Image (cartoon, rainbow, N blue to C red; front, side, top):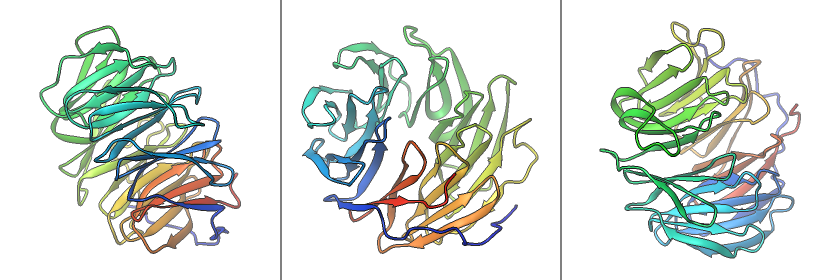
Length: 345
């Protein structure tokens, strides 16, 4: 496998543009579509929204008791949805923090929330997949599956993907049964489709990744990971695919015929388990964070290491600004930092 090349000559502004502090472990970070607002979910059940310009706290509410586990912005940025271990979904007015809806999502905590391009909110809670409108009216409740759902993604064609033990399923709104099942003998923990919908990837508890090429009708498996594969990320153009299993990040080339029979870029830069992994939305830069308190920045196009920095707390979340010039880092102690990346193109 290929290793890291280049040096750390990239100029990183080590002083963040702004810092903020939540009361507990940061579970999730999510920028609004315009990049004006940053939402934060924490392990104490809190939901907070900050001004992206200066880090000013606009509001914070203790919303979900045992922990906030899901965040999703509507496509127009006018609504923020949150879900938690209290099995409820809340819809927020982003500027004021007022609730415009609150309802029970099912049995168990809300694992994922995702808006479609036309404003339908999908949720997975335990073994249940449901679709809602923006006011909380139930549009469709699918029959519960045999195992707990772990992943949820809308596809470009308007279909919906879910993952669970043994399969990835493709659903069509309005239809009761899956349009197609992609079978896999094992427990699937993570799910990520390429932006163009050409590939579906799923990471497993058994230390492997399964890829399905939709149009070609074929699949391939990458195995040999040291631990469960919980973190997956695609480059904006769908050509590169990154995985995080244990302390190592691997980047696979999915252009052309795909990664089968090829070697990935192998990046063993962390000494602790990777906790967050994300490609930049406009370039082939990728960031990873880990339990060893380090953040690693890499240019996958030129195969250059750009920066590594270490703080005092484990990294718990990463989120790129929509324009790609800033990286937001969340930490286990509730610290939140917005880092400006000088030299980004």
